[in-house]
Amino acid sequence: MAGLNHNAQRTHGFENLTVEGSIPAELRGTLYRVGPGLVERFGRSVHPFLADGLITAVKVADQPVGASDLVRSEKFLEEDRAGHALYDYNAPFHRRLYNGVTRTVKNTGNTHVLSWQNRLFALMEQGQPVEFDPKDLSTIGSTDLDILNGSFSAHPHRVEARKTTYNFGINGHHVEVYALPDSGQVRLLCRFKPPWASLIHDFIVTDRHVLFFIDPGKLVVWRALLGLRDFTKYFQWDEGESSTIIVIPIDNPGQMTRIEVDPFRVWHFANAYEVGDEILVDAFRHANIDVLNSPTELTSDIPQPELYRFRIKPGSKQFAGEKLGAVPSECPSVNPRVVGVERQHIWVQTYADAEGTEGFARFDIDTGRYSRYFAPEGHLTSEPMFVPDGVDEATGWILQLTKDSERDQSYLAIHDAKTVGAEPQARLWFDQAIPATFHGI
Image (cartoon, rainbow, N blue to C red; front, side, top):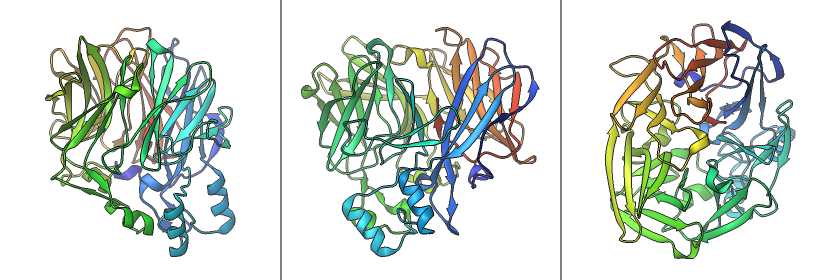
């Protein structure tokens, strides 16, 4: 994926895309994806996690259109006026120190998209959400949703049974968990103090519990306060510490359970559900936090993530894990309409290995088998998005934004989810290459 790590070539509103193949007549809607859009600004490079965000959208219709625009938050515009960086490690030292002491962060909106009550928001790890206009992707502005006192995470999860989306944020030394109902106001579900300051990227929800896996990748406070250039050293893995599993009952959040286990990290969860007194969690297990060194490229010196199933019994504080699959992959998901209930299939982005090039796969939990699609050589893929045709797990489409390195152009690939290994039914071509995108809806 290293070839995806570049600046946006240009920004634009919705323009016609060139269609190769045939778009399924039943597939209509808009895909939104975000990622680091400016990995170089004011003549200086920046870590992709800190780069200004780029929103890319594709409206799938008889004549599809695509748009791409930067997340132009208030602090982004302030830097534009100043003509130099003010909020990352390229800022002057006195400004970096001020930002660290006052916890001032620019909302880059480079990680995920939230759709809530007919509004769209670009999200990032540390800041508050940035609302944007779906008509042209223009930035409306940052918002605290009338309740946020700190940050708002980039990985919200909606629970259909509760008609509610859940997310969390960091406020000082505490994690705050929020409930965003399909109608009504955002409310604070609970707050708790984690064992130490760490990079909590994702969490997971069932219809009864909220779960956090907090690993010993500890924030090195003095490095963050000084805003030192090497962002990868802001967090240090403490092999001597445990990971802490925190289980919070949604209807009685004061009765949370903490379980200490051998250290490991989860960047992304696929799904979780409950059977009796047991919670089953499917996620990618990492040995440590080394992926910070290369977030857009899988390298040989970074331990390979492994797809795991974790079994948790909060009442007796039992915790166990078993490896499900070994194909190099990440960014898991299930049918978004049925998150929080038992699923047979997990969709993952796959990386090049001895079997072939990168692409995507459907993992069958019952059989332990992968069905894989291998992209053409030199085609760089992204997180696959499963669009269901109903509630069936295997019926629908996979959308995967892909860059053809030779043509230096990107396209949205539309695959029939029933025939994973086949070539796309359609490719919707942009006239430019889109940089790496992390997540979308």
